[in-house]
Length: 438
Image (tube, rainbow, N blue to C red; front, top):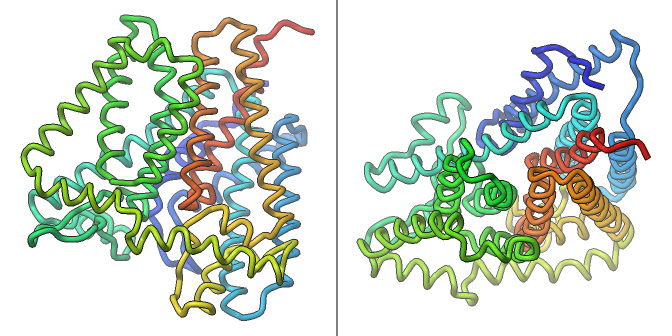
C-alpha cells in the first residue's frame, strides 16, 4: 500500500497541487495552457509509465468510483457535441474538453496515488495544497500594496515577462480621482480569489481550534487564518463572503462552544484592529466603496441574476444535454451581442451547457463527496482522532461554502476544486487503514 513511485513523480504531483489556483501562469499555445496543466500532463505520463513498468493495474475502490464519474461526465459531454451548431461552438467545446480531461483525470489518478501512500504523505499533500492558497494570497497583498502605494502594476513587472501576456490588479473604479483596487493575485478575478480562499479558511479553522495549547503549529495557523481573512476582505467579494458565511454556519454545529474562546477572539481581534485602522485613515473613501458593494440595484448585480433567465429558453430547445460544454458564451453572444461572456453562475452554466442529465450527474457527484466526508467523520470518531474529525468538518464546511458561492460565479469548474475533491475522496481511504478489521 505504501509503495513509492519515486521522487520525481512525487515532485510533479505536489507541484501540480501547489499551482492549481495560479490561473495567471498560462501561455497561449494551442489554446490556453496553464502551468498546472503542463505539470498535470507530465505527471500523468510519468505515473502511467511507472504503473506500466510494474504491470500493476490495481485501482483503489474510491479511485474506481471517481473513474466511473469521469466516464459518465465524458459521455454527457460527448452527447452534447451533437448539439453544436457553429465552428465557434466547436472551438469552445474543444477547449472545455481539454481542461476537463486533464483535471478530472488528475482527480482520479490522484485518489489512486494517495490511496497507496502513507498518512504522512497525505498530510504533506494537504499542506502543499493549503500552501498554494497562502502563496496566492501573499502575492495578492503585495500586488495591492504596490498598486496603492507606488502605483505599480506588479503583474506587468513579474508575470508578463514569464507568460508574455498582459494582466493587472482589478480596478473597481475611482473615487475623487483615486483608484479603488481589488487584488486578484494569481487568479483571474478578485471574486475568484475571494471564493477560492473560502477553502483554506474553513478547512484550517477547525484544525487550528483543535490543536493542543502550545502546539508548534498553533501560532502559525492563527497568523495564517488572520492573514487569509484580511485578503478575503480586501477582495470585496460578496460571493466569497457568502460562501464563508455558509461554511461558518456548518462549523457552528461542532464548534459553537468555541465562539468566545481566546484562540478565536484573538486572531479576529487582530483582523478587526487592522481593518479599523485602514478604515479610519480614509473613512469617506471606504464608505463609498462599501456602499457600492451592498447596493443590490447596481448593473453588475442585475447581470448576475439576469443570466438565470436564459435557463428556460435553453431547456425548451435542448433539455437533456444542453448546448454543449463551455458554450454559454457562444449562446450569450448570439442573444445579446456580448462576446466571451461567462454565465456568472456555475448552476446556470451546468444547466445551459449540459442540460438536465448533466446537472443531475453533478448533483450526484456532490452527494458522493458529502457522503465520503461523512465517512471520514465516522473514521475520526471511531479512532478518537483530534485531527481527522476536524479535517472532515472543515472540508464539509468548505464544500458547502463553495457550493453557495457558486450561485453567482463558476469556480467549481476551476482546477482547484478538482484538487479539493481529490483530497476529500482520498482521505477516508488513507485513514481507514487504522480501523480494526471488521
